[in-house]
Length: 399
Ligand SMILES: [Zn+2]
Ligand SMILES: [Zn+2]
Image (cartoon, rainbow, N blue to C red; front, top):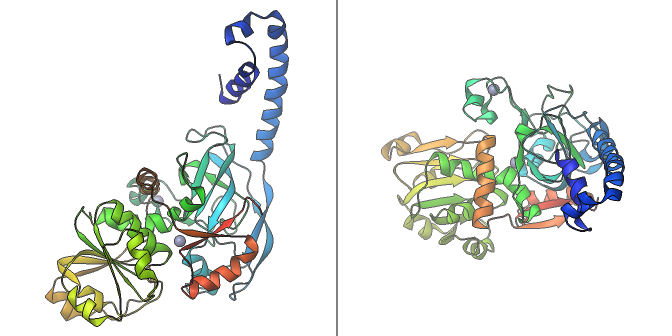
């Protein structure tokens, strides 16, 4: 019996006597097929409607100044392996801002950003196996990849050799045109690129895990951060605060370096053992050569040698924040300590599911402020001015 028939059957029997009595009843036997047929037909019509191509309410940037306005975007009809997700919460990542400002090249306007979203599955294609209608799903930084190259086969879809399709401002290889992100009411996505969100979690607090969470989780996996090791987190905004929470949950000794004095107390509340201002020269000196791994989450380029100096021999500083030319790394000094400076960007789908499950297990979620879609532009300005504490989540349920 398919789920929808099963649900219909349970609805029909739940309020009456036992299932056996129900089946014994001649009247029920006569009525049930008719009622079930009507209910199933209605459900099928509803499901069919939710799989059709549609025009969807969204909020778009029309130029580089970041003033957002309502906009309507097309979403494709769901194919057999697609899910339709009604977006409930969508959070603002600094990448959204870099993109509309043209920091990484001029985007295609109107631009609908958003690659941290959580919502309810309202339609499933005929061959979908991972989700049922009503499930909660997340969508992160990418929505498609070739699936056949060496990197995709190694669960590294973000590094697809034939070109990952990112969630917004990316060539849409299925529908043509450009992809539109999560500042919208609905998205249609291959089930392979949708993540399962476990029941009982704070859905708004989980949206940021879809980019900030995986971006900061992947390096601690790849560089194998162990409990008790010293882990330095440089910058504590949207990415940094999740880096602290996730590494602390893993049992690492986390030390935060921030430029905002009021974040020192927050860092400790998030699980950091210590927190310092960059400008505190004595503190910086006291940390020399003491870290097993460091993560830079600062969204702009800055001289990095001051932090490379804090690594132990042979250790690595991973940059996930400044996706620009690296500044201020000194060959001689890095050579002396044989330190590495590495890059990392988001993570594969399987690893993204791991961070979601890890966060659910350890009670980790983002710290956030909820906003309405009308406040997107203002919130983006606050992110740039380091005023976010620590993610802005757009409430689409009221939009
Ligand atoms: Zn590929
Ligand atoms: Zn992001």
